[in-house]
Length: 121
Image (tube, rainbow, N blue to C red; front, side, top):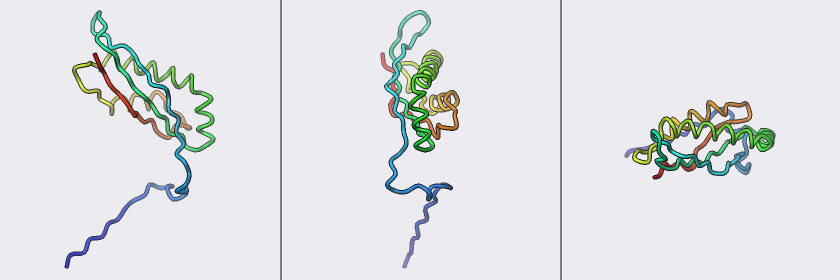
């Protein structure tokens, strides 16, 4: 007879959060910037960013700073579009997330999530 045992691991601090606590997230409106190749408009780059807050207080502070956070995200999206986006290639969401996380690094931001991303002609 074969016996299987499954073991799961939880991150440190995960047990302190109750199962009924809603996630602390701040969803930004979609950001749309042009894809420019040389001297012509080549398409549109779209990204929707969600910030996971450390706690309710952090979520409140992030909500107050939403215009600043959106401006920073917009600048990063423009730069990413200029350097890496093309309608003929898939978007490197891992690289985009890393660049956004670096730009939005803050003690209130637990994580930067990308829920939608596309580069279209």
